Length: 355
Image (cartoon, rainbow, N blue to C red; front, side, top):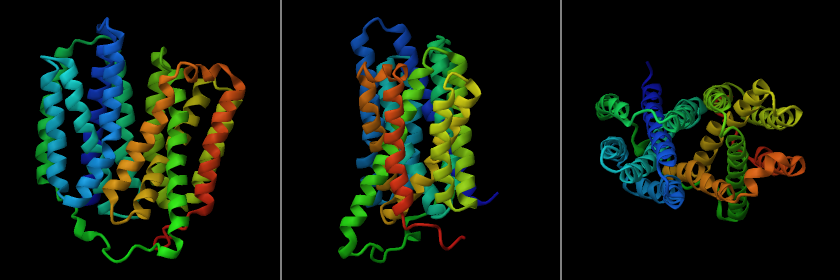
């Protein structure tokens, strides 16, 4: 197997284990704790560290360039999370959030350094995470004994050995010449970056709303997780094989149409979710190519800061009821479409070397 695909699979497995552990711990706590404030603070604290921490972690990684070291530390954090769950679940959640920060940043960076035009690698890396958090959350909510949790120690140890032996790409593969954006066009460049960040954030906002809609139905939750994972995996491959702009435009329109035709139909819902999430790999790659000499920072913006921004409204009770208001739901869909349409229209990155 090609080294770059081994890298993507290795970090994809780490991502899946990481999000499974986080999903399980948070759901288990929410079921077994009688203190609502503690549960709320645990969710909030995890989100701030795991997602908000990605930007400073990315800046640090771009500065030090110790990709393998940071990757090993991330997996070690998962081992600590599993071990700490025996003593204190809040400490376990803390270790899990630290691990999550670095797994996202390291995995996204490693995939980019392996091949700067291959969205399929990003798809392989990102897809296991969403299935992991959904399946872990379901098992945690079902109060599966935490004893079974410790069986994860074996594959995690194997994963550390794999990453230690893995030929992780180096930062020296980056182009250290001046950024393609000149000072004369920096304002346009910055505006596009903000638009791309908004596009990712509004996609995540719509995802959060769909997740909330499925929250009390395990069948729909499982469908949500599987379709999102498949969407990311297939979306990465498709946008690697065909011009990405055409596909992203199709997936945006398809998502909105299907969600507004009949959101109560599970099959249409799952297809819409798959289309929605299928753009994740290419937007991550797009951000990295616009910050080509800071791939970890770009990853932290895409998989971290944008997610934090999208997560803020979920703590507002009125937002959680939007699915019952057709007008507001359509408004969210429009807010999703506008920055994504602008991103597709204005982006000058088209994988010209490949097509």
